[in-house]
Length: 284
Image 1: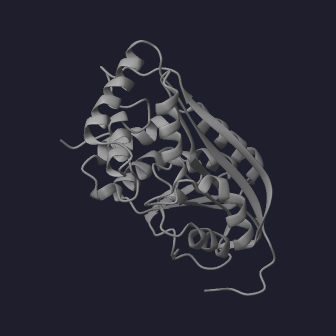
Image 2: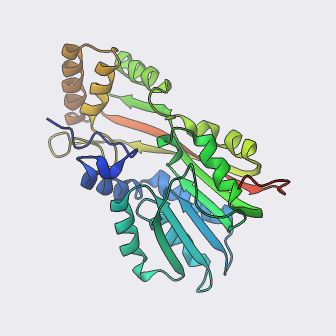
C-alpha cells in the first residue's frame, strides 16, 4: 500500500499523494520554526515600496504574499515553481494581494528572467530538492540587481532527532540522516558558502529548530507537517540499515512510545540573507 505521508517535493504533480503534500505545506507554514524564520527574513530583507521580488520554489505563495505587504501597490511579486498544482493554489491566494503578484511555471536551475531584473530574491526549503543547489543560487544572483538582496532558508536533515526513550534507535536514526543519499538534504548548513560562491556577501544568518513533543499514531500516520514514521522506517530498510522484520518491530516501538507520551522529534532550519556584489560580467 502506498504511504500517502511519505513526503517529498521533488516532483509534486507526478506524486500520487499531491493533495497530502499540499496539505503538509500548509501545516509546515504554521510550524513555530517556519514562522520565526519568515519574520526574521522580513526584517532582514527590508523590502521597500515599489521593489520587485522573485520567489524561487514559491509553493503555495503564502510567504511571498506576506512579504508583498511591504512592496505597496507599485511593487510586484513573481513566484515560480515546477508544480502546477501548487501554482494553482498560489494564484488563488493572490486574489487579495496588495501588490502585483504572478505565479508561473519555472525551473530554479534555469531561470527565464533577464539579468538584473529583481531587487530581492527568496527561496525557502527548495534547494534540498534540487540536483544542483549551487546552480540554482547562481541563477538567483544573476537576476538580482547590483546591491539586491537574496534570502535562502533551508533544512539540514542531519540535525533531525527522534527520541522515544531508546538511545540505540535515536542514534541509528540520527546517523542515517547525516548521510546525503539521493538529494542534498543537509544543504541548510551550506547556505552561506553557496551564497558567497555565487557572488553575494552574507550579511545576516539565523536558525530555528522545530520540535514535536507529541504524536497520536491512531489519528494520523505523521506528526504535523512531517513525513510518516512508516516512511522513515522504510527508508532505513531500503538503505540496508534495518531488515524488514526489524523495521516493522521498530515502527511498532515508535508508535507504542508515542501512545504512552514518550515521543519527541526536532529538526533545524537555517536562514541566510546576502547582498549581491557589483557584477563584472553576466552569464546570460
